[in-house]
Every structure is written in structure tokens, then in C-alpha cells.
Length: 187
Image (cartoon, rainbow, N blue to C red):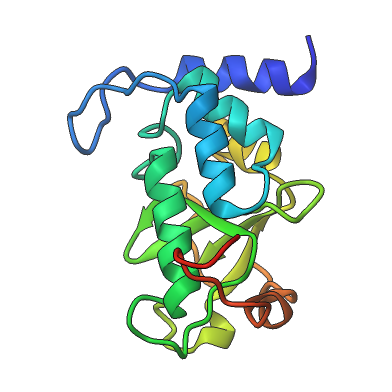
């Protein structure tokens, strides 16, 4: 069994049948067609481990804090943030290839860098109030982030807390300024 196979098995075993915050049942997995449609909208492929999470565990609602976003919601969020900077505020540019995949509460999002070889996990935290201070490195990769969640060692663990102790993401500015796209433009 490969490391990712073992990790997927562990995540599936830890994913509750009912979401602890909403009381909604865990959705069925996304289909290959759902992933193909998401990648067509995004204009780039999703990391293989993320695809496996969506197609083999569930289409969201499991994982740290409020859980992974459903695939369609993650894509919609990415497209909206890329199209307008951040919501209605164009002074908050969204980095190209960085897809929000989990709601961590208090306006914070866990995001996967789809351009990174390791699918680096980034934290978007707008609470400091300045875009330059809103991006942190959560984990070197998606696998490490999931392992931290499973082992209760991530910053989102109540015992660990988050006091800005993560390094800022150095790639933010260069990636945020690459061609802003809109949902009406070709990918």
C-alpha cells in the first residue's frame, strides 16, 4: 500500500458519517465527470491526492474545522476570488492556482497550491487587515496537512492554537498579480 493509499484509508476512517457542525450527512464522493468539469473551469488540474479525497472519501464536509468544501463550492470560490480580487474589494488579489478547499472559521480558508509539486497548503487569513499579511504556509503539502489533522498536531487543534507562528507565504505577490481571470473569459 502506498503512503497516499494509507493516508486515504485513514482519512476515510476519520471522516464522520454526519458533519459535526451542520448535522448533514457526509455526501457521496464526487465523480470523475465532476472533477473533469472542475478542472475545465479552473483551467488547471487538481493535485492527485485532492482528486482522490473528493472521488474516494466524499464531496466535502470532512476534515479540519468545518471540513473540506464541496468541490463545486471550492471552484466557485476560486473563480469569484480570482475574478474580483477578493469579494468586492479588488485590493485583495487572489493568487493564481491557489484553490480554497476548507473553511477554518473566522473568515480563514485553507487553500491548496495546485501549482506546487507537493500541493502546498496555505492559510488565507484576512483578519490582520492587510493583504501582505494574509497568507501563511500551513504545511509543505496536502499529505502533511491531512496527517497533522489526523494526529491532532495541526495549528487548528485546540491545544496548538494559532498565534501567527506560521511563516508568511513568499510567493503571494508574484502569483496574485498573474492574469486575473473571470468566469466569462477562456481559461
